[in-house]
Image 1 (cartoon, rainbow, N blue to C red):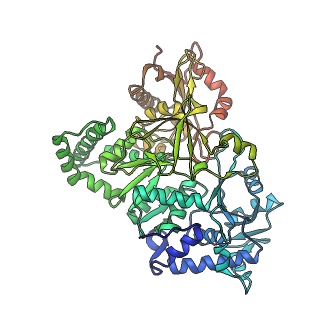
Image 2 (image 1 turned 30 degrees about the vertical axis):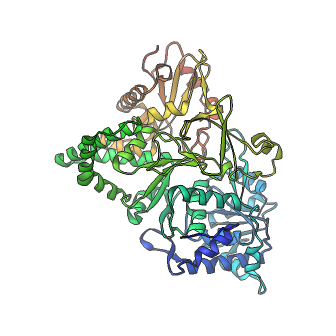
Image 3 (image 1 turned 30 degrees about the horizontal axis):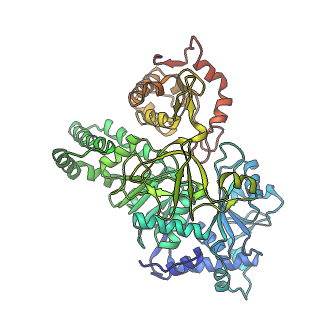
Length: 601
């Protein structure tokens, strides 16, 4: 649809909600809950009035802490219509982390599920009202209580029309890999530039269907499910349990979809497990043939080489007979384009899905840039790159390879941290991204790694641990997370953590009674499978990058735990300190029995 130039999210929402009021805007799998645009808009009006009755005004901060659910949307958008800064809090935060975020943000009202009310109340100063969806524990307000607080003379239109483009629309808290999370202030203008920018590249239409399954505190979910919907009118299926995303895809069959690399890797592993375990020999051979054709085609595409006509014809046959049915089984047969972002995706995984007929456009961005700063449509994308900068953004590469960007997506600043803001964004508006990036002659960006995470070995060789980790993880679905080590060392080693979701299927397939991390880490078969995977991954790496020794840890690393952030980034400094003894053992002259050695050079 043709869009007039809106300055704020509320203005865009009011236009979008009037396009087709009877259309379903929000749903859950199986249509157990649906909400039309007309009902959505009415609830937004009621929530805005209720929050105004609680004293929320333009510039105040409202926090939300809940699972992915339909009720989230009118509550968040209602706050936006007052000019309040609405943001989401990760449900898995510890009490200390929750206190830091809510206090740092200056949240006056917190809207949450009842199980979080006690933790929110413990924060104390600053939080004036706790509103609970579902049941309301003592000392909190229910949603009906909120709505009943609306003043009779509330001027809804006057409230949302007073919101300004430069007002802070949301806060996104950084991962906190090197310290306490910082609140990134993002304006209405930046988010509107963001939505229109990606829509201009990818093509998004009113009624396009997508899922919300990542935490709403993650900017990727806020952008693709909330802000894109407000501006462009997509239909969002809210998936309350991320583990049910596979079933939800089959239910919805989305037209546009995106996920973090780990989700794509898990889908890839699930297909490979299914093919390997297919009991019908003829069917298994057909699947293996189709996947081998797909792999040969995508290998050429990844290398930037032309696909011979004979192979293209063979792929078309494989697609008609097998691959199209695999896409349908995944629920991705209607997808016009797919995205991967938030972290580098292994090239093998990109190639796997391109071979299936699901080309993934890898994106690059960061919270400080409203989410997505570079992307290309899959038909134009160069596999292995993260696309081109969105029109209107500028880039330069510093002498040390760090990418600097400037333009409308750059954050307003870190909340309450002017000094750290100045360290990140210079006086001319250039944001230091912290990423080492190369830009080719056609403008495509290729991310090497985080500047602060580069390994410089004892011989002075610079290496990307992420690139090494991706090469090895792509070779075996058993690896959930791994940390490559080697800074200041003579060679690279790795701590390997098994994938929690692959553990049980593997144990069952191999007749192992105990699928715990400790049991599998000690199992000779698992160690042998991992050794084969590491060797296969090493084969794709230069000699100096190869992992010479590794150790399997007897634990699963959980998002938000000591080792991994809520956005699935490794806390490398924490890992180096926590596992110092294990790391030293990896470099011992005579390694212990728990160390797998692949030979040194």
